[in-house]
Image 1 (cartoon, rainbow, N blue to C red):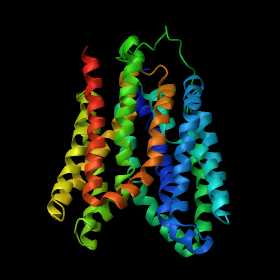
Image 2: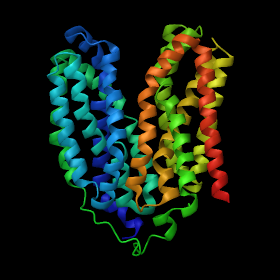
Image 3: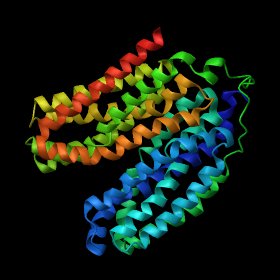
Image 4: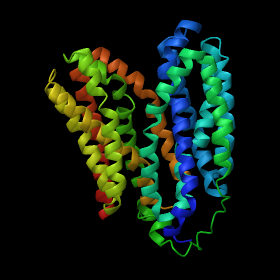
Amino acid sequence: MPASRRLPEYGLLLAGLALTRIIGWGSIYYSPSVLAGHLEREIGLTPTVAFGGITILLAIGALISPMLGRHLDRRGTRHAMALGAVISGLGLALLALAQGPISYLATWFIIGIGHAMQLANTGNVTVAQLMGERTRRVIGLMMLVTGLASSVFWPLTAWLSADYGWRACLFVFAAIQLVIVLPIHLAIPAYRAKPLADPEPSAGPTEEQGRVPPGERRAVFWLLALSFSASGLVSWGLPLHIIGLMQGAGIAGASAVAIASLSGPATLVARAVDTVAGERLPVERVALAGLALGPISCLLMALAPGSSAFAISFVILFSAAMGVIAVARATLPLALFGRNGFGAMLGRLTVPQNLTFAAAPLLFAFLVERLGASGTLMVSAAIQSFALLAMIMLVRRLRC
């Protein structure tokens, strides 16, 4: 079916999938930020243990994503995402029953399986299998909407946990997985993989097979993995410490919080611009722009500590860069390697990326403690420059 007809046909389903992304990321990834205080007071969990669940979640994703990706290419995403909703609901219910650090962390292994099966790369594979050449724009729109997850679930989590307790809050989130998320995932059409020699009529060879010739695929894959893993190390680690870094640089606490709050709007605007205008440019060029903004923003802040104007520039540029790169991380593999085997490709890329993302919070806590604000920002700029260099090498290989 031509892609121009797919968007109206699947519009309601895509809206539903966007809703499940908000629910999934909000109830699973963002809720510990609000619940950490309750967990410390009621069952004695330190913040390190509370956020250690996210580290386990990312590590589980790295472990199962290659196998999961191959399954998605063969069987589609419907059953995996539906089962993921059930497992996530079970995991959140068990999390509500946690009595200490062992039961709390053990539950995150279950939640990590459910998260990998219904969120992260699985949703992007769903879009690719449904939307064909419109995939990049639709993924951009999905990620734009997903950026609202914290804005919705931080206050919702705070209200539920304050009025009814953190355990009741998690039981509500578990029920939402079964009552709202599961039916939407079951509405995904059944998928049957097409033979490689029989691509759909509307799809050209580049769309199906990608732009990278077979002899270059291994080198391009590792350059892509290096670039996105290095940039992700900063994007998953540095934002957790932005307020502290600004305070360490001499900016007052209230001002630091106000400046940091610009991060969300800047990310949303950058993703919106990429969604609207990005299709006119090769996605690797858009990724290059985002990767170049990252180190520039960190150097601005490092070289002018205590300046509110430079801090505002840093937050806006850094957040915009991370927003653009996040979209490129989901769409560039499709442009380079095509729809055939897209799930398996994303699964392989998830391994180095998730392991890096899982290490990021601890690494940046160590850097801030040992190097201070300016030193941490300089190291961040160096890591992002390495990511930029890897992407430049990738683009040069594509020209050959």
